[in-house]
Image (cartoon, rainbow, N blue to C red; front, side, top):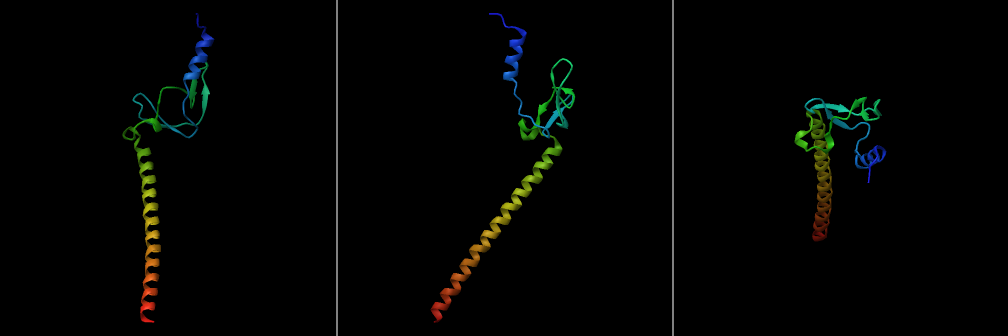
Length: 116
């Protein structure tokens, strides 16, 4: 069975599905270490897909292990982790205060009942 160029293109399109959206970060350049934000998708004069009018030659940062992320993304992720940790601490403190208030009320009621 002979596979035509059209059928081959269809098969490749089915296989190549990238999980990319406008605003995602990719790593480009010779050593794949230059952080680039996706602004638009397109096609070149040969019909090949492009990102920001450049051919596909990149790594998708969100799919890489965290130690290979760019410095700026690591900093942004650290800030988000700090915010999550702060929220957790505040929530635990609020819950602890509520428990303390309940215990204090119960203790006061017990003392009143013993006195009366």
